[in-house]
Length: 414
Image 1 (tube, rainbow, N blue to C red):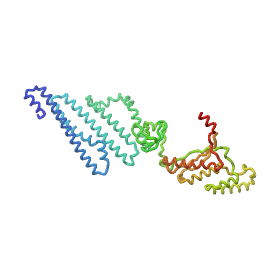
Image 2 (image 1 turned 120 degrees about the vertical axis):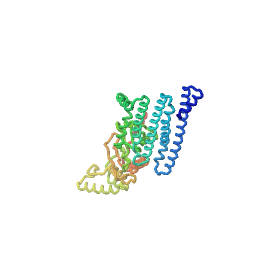
Image 3 (image 1 turned 45 degrees about the vertical axis):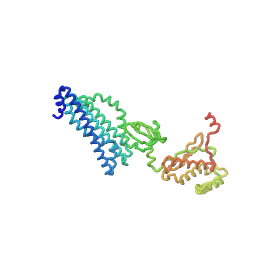
Image 4 (image 1 turned 60 degrees about the vertical axis):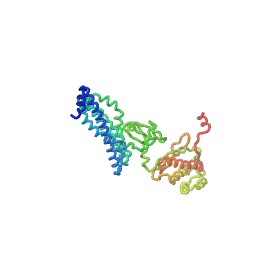
C-alpha cells in the first residue's frame, strides 16, 4: 500500500516495526498538513481572483461586500478540509485511537467553518440590505444576531456531541432538565429578541429617529438597533446605550411624528404684570393705529364698539362702562397677526395666542405656533427671532414684563 511505503522501507533497513509505524505516521501527517495548506492557499487565491473579476463585471455591490466580510476566504477552507477527511484514515492507519481523535478534530473544524461561512454571509446580507431604502431604518442587525445565537448554540452542542460520542438527538433531549438554567443565562437575549420583534412590528423606533429617553439620559438620533442594545448619539456627540427591552417596558419620546409633519411646535409664555393691564381710551387707540399690522383691526373694532355703546346709551365718562378695548387684548391680536405674517411660521397648522390662568408672578400669555423649518438650529433661530420682537413690542402697548424684584434676587443668591 502506498501509504505504507516509508514503513516498509524502514523495516527493511532494520528499524523496529513500532518505530517504523510512528515515523511513517509522523511523516505522512507532515505531508498531509503541507498538502492541505497548499491546497487551501491555491483555493483561496483562485476564489479571490474569481471574486475580484465578478465584482468588477457586475453592477451590484453585493459581491464587494462578500469580499469585505471574508466570505470567499471561508469558502476556500472547504476544499482542503474535504481533502483532509479523505487522507486522515490513511495517515493514521496504524493507530486507530489517533485516527478517531483526528476525525473528531476535523468534524469540529467542519462545524466551525460552516458557522463562519453562515456568519460572513449574514453580515454581507445585513450590509447589503442597509443600502436599500426600504430596509435602511430597520433593525436588521437584531435578526442577524438572533439567528447567529441559535447557530452558535447548535454548533457548540454539535461539537460537544462529537467530543462525547453522544448522538445529537440524545444530547438535545438531555438538555430539557437544564432548560431553566439556559433561560436564566439567556434572559436578556430572549427579552431583547422579543423586544426587537415588537419594536419592528409596531414601528416604534427606526434607525435615524430622534428619541428622548430621560431615564437613560438619551436625547439624540438612533444610530444602531441590535438584539441587546439601542445606541443613541446625543446632540453633544456622546453615545448612550439603552437595553432594547426598555423600549417596550418604559416610556420614551419619539420625535419622528414632528419630523414627518409640516412643522415644529413653538410653545412659550410671556408673563405680563397684572398692574399694567388697562382699558384703552380713544386717544390711546388712535395712537396704536400707527402700528400697521393692527391698524385695520383697531379701526373696525373701534367703530363697532362706538356703535354698540351709542345704541345702548352707555355713559362713557368712565372707561369701565360698556364695551372697551384693553391693551392686553390688542397686544394678543397684534402677536397673532404678527405670527400670521411671519414667513417662517406654518399657517396650515395650529396658530394662536392665549391667556393662561393668572399666577402670583402675573398673567402668562402663551404663544402656540409651528415653525416651517424643523431643523434644530434653524428652529431655535426662528423662535428667538419671534420672541425678540414680541418682548420688544410689549412697551408699545403700555404693558410690562414681569421680572423678579431685585431684593428677592439677592435673597435667592445669598
